[in-house]
Length: 325
Ligand SMILES: [Zn+2]
Image 1: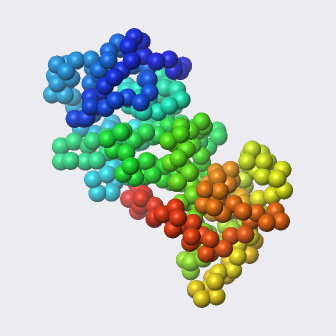
Image 2: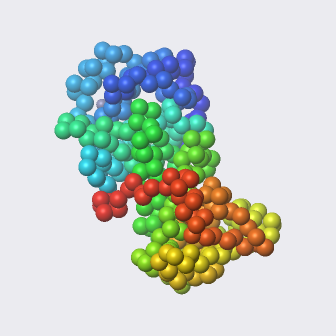
């Protein structure tokens, strides 16, 4: 059962969370009538008075999310919390997250979901920075249901880290994942940056001596290549324009180290090499300025990829898979 109506009574004006006073961006269906809410940064329980909150904080036993560590690098830890095992915690995390997410439904029934909560550790307490939720079983291979970085911690790369981990989970399951739609404006912006960086990094690596696995996928002879969904709407649309998703990779400039690349590949293979869905890869190509077809074939040169990397300020991934467990 889902509920997406605003909370009963007055709109929330202020939420006090982990030493921050935050103004909510959107309504969340908190079943409480108040303009100010205190939310515990340990268990995400919500309270309507400072006295109750302070009494709770003294008694609260949560120093970190109730789950298992799936990633730890320095002070940053990602926790996998099972909605079936920590029902109240996950419900409360989702209610809090909804304050900063547009057009998403908060579900009462959280048992089919995991939430992945990112924390920043001090010696006493792991401060929650944001999270994403994911259906345990998704027949559409959705790797993420909703994502939020709490306002005090935005613009520090944490959203990218969460997206990268959601794709790491898809890759580990050998599927081409994608986030659930619709995406918020902020979400789409984040994904466009992530997808285009992922695509550009893949193309850059294809020309490097160590890019054997990528070249194999581009050549179409990797067993790991997952066949694309030919029914994807973007593919149909591009095909209707006369481009069937064929990509030609130009030979690298004579000066650089020359690695033989398959001269032609397909959009599906390029997407598979980058771990993206073909429709998401098409958006990424457009974002990178590489979606310029000539005679129905895309021509991608090393120079154009490097220019895109510079323009988009593409950096290495934030997630270091060596720290995934
Ligand atoms: Zn608490």
